[in-house]
Image 1 (cartoon, rainbow, N blue to C red):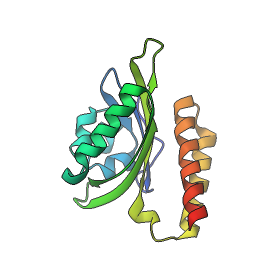
Image 2 (cartoon, rainbow, N blue to C red; image 1 turned 45 degrees about the horizontal axis):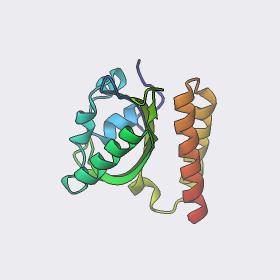
Image 3 (cartoon, one colour; image 1 turned 135 degrees about the horizontal axis):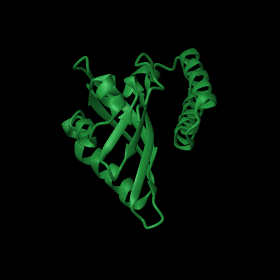
Length: 164
């Protein structure tokens, strides 16, 4: 399973974590923000590779929130800093939802990130362009989990646009 929705040039990255296999698949944007190789991320890598890119001051809080969502089958929504492939710290918001199997085991955990540094300037034109891009990607999504994630991104962008 390779994840190829994003091209690495947008501030929105997508992931799908197969929890039981401890394999996170992501797009090129996710790879860039976490300082990883795009092909490795598309082919799938352990969540530990992503966790190691989180700022030490945010690490415990972010990891705890991920673990809570995975154990409860709930929503994950956190702001934290990550070290990018350009070796700089960027503040992101990450959001997702862990889905559980009927027996209660965490199954898969789709989600997305947005670079807060990119959208914090209040540039409504850029936000609207991002929203249109995500809506276009949503129309191409055939996987229900991708659809869920992209709908969540649109809702978050709508909130940010309203608040600008």
